[in-house]
Structures are given as C-alpha cells and as structure tokens.
Length: 342
Image 1 (tube, rainbow, N blue to C red):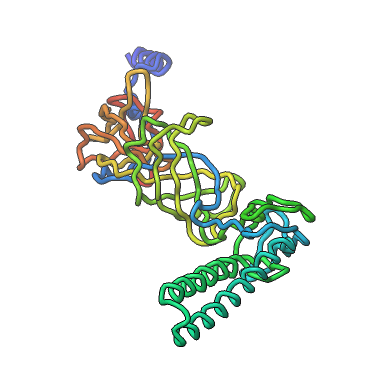
Image 2 (cartoon, helix red, strand yellow):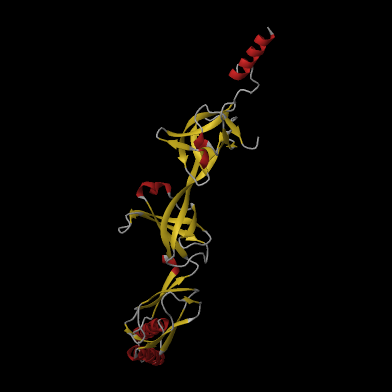
C-alpha cells in the first residue's frame, strides 16, 4: 500500500498535476502622461511674408527750384545719415542768379517811381490813379522777389542737408549733372518710419483690420519686433496676386529691404485647450483619449486651431477626466493604462 502511494505522488510531481502557487498574470497596460481638459481660447494668428520698406509719409526728396549743376555728392545709396548732414552741394545756374538780381533791381525801381509819383501828387502834378498804379508796381515787384527768395534767391551755392536721421533710399543724379528746376536729387527715408508690407490671401482679407497687433520675425534670424496693422489694400498686388497689408513697427526695429515673416493676430478661437501631442489624427478624423476607471476612452473632436504646443478643439470632453498626452498614439479605445509617476 505504501509503495502504491509513493508511486502516485511521484507521478503527480512528474506530470505537474499538483496545485500551482504562481499568481494569475495581470492584463497589459500602456504607460502614459496626462493633462487636464481646460476650456478657454487661443489667439488666431495669420502668417504672412513680406519685407520692410520706408513709409510713403516718411520719405523726403531733396531738390532745388532753380536750374544748376550738382557740384558734389556726399551720399551713397542705403547710407545712414543724420539730420543736418550735407548731402548735395549745388551750384545755381548763372541765368537764375541773373533773374534774382533783375527782380531786386525791379523792386528798387518801382519803389523809386512810387516815391516820385507821391511827390508829384503832393504838388498836384500827378493823379491818384497814377499813385495807385505805382503802388501796384511796387507790390508786384516785391511778390516776384519774394518768390525767388523762397527758392534760394541769390545764393550761388546751395547746401542740401538731411532733414532728419534716416537712410538714403535713392540718388537720382550723378556728380556733375546739370538739372532743371525741381528735379529730384536725393531721397531720404526717415529711419523711425519703417513699415513692413506683407501679402495675405484674398480669402482672409475680411479678417485683417487696422489696429490688429502683429509680431514680425526676420527670416535671417534675430529677436521678434512688435507692430500693428495700419493699412489693408482693397485690390490685388499685380505681381504677387495677394492683398498688401502694411504693418507699423517700433522705432529702429528693422532696416529697409529685410525679409520678414509676420504673425497677425486676427482674433481668438474658443474651445477646449489641449496639448498638441494629445490630438490623434487618423483617416476617421481627430480624437482624444481620456481615462475612465484605468482605461482609455476615445472622444471624437474637431480641431479648430493647431499650434506648436497647444490646440483648440471642439467635442464632448468630460472635464473631470484626465487627457492622455504622451502615449496617446500607443493606446486604443478600452486599453488599460497606467499613469507615469503613480
């Protein structure tokens, strides 16, 4: 009997039929990080590209309202200049000087004739009409001389100076050139009145308005520059086929010709603010995962705004449930999850 029991125990041990002490395996789970579901809004930023240029109201063209010759040029294109700095030395044409001298002589003669007429009137040898005509001759001669004085008068050499601190944006003449009255010589752009002109698609023109804030970034790198929209065109730019938008910038922020990327704040987008990494996109659309009783629950959403860090979405999220952020692309609806750090 004892040998039979011994044989039975031995067989049970060999075949593994005895009771097992190993615990039951736990179901697999995905390690995730979470964030709260928060309602709010994020700024809607319209991105556009363009370049900096002097404001049309911030440039001044220097000229002389007399014929003459450019004796010396003290400026070069794109050079920085300071207020009062001499940019052009201009010699007035002798004929213009002669006209001024003739005007001086004409006024002196008219005044002398008027004095003589007044004396004759006192002696009853002239009429009041003759005195009136003499007064008019003096007035006409004085007006002609005053006009010549306003354009330089009898100055044989004119020194054209920079009207403000700025940049020489254009030089229309060469040293030695002879010019006609009023010909453009040098154009100076005010360094404190630089604007950025960027192009936006016609479909979003209605969203852009004067006064909206903007942030400008140089494509070559560097710190951002703050600005605001001051003008929106009502017609397409014939070259770019876009709508030009002018953005005023802070003084000294940019140089003419710099290539820029502008971010114009055209409004705010309300909804659920969620981390960009939490939004899972597929052929069936976008969705998020929330945690309920240790399991992932898929929630379909519509993405209203995409950002580098945060998105704005619309959907039936449960604010009391945590959102899955890292690990969102590794889980499926109903999968068990475990939260990192717990």
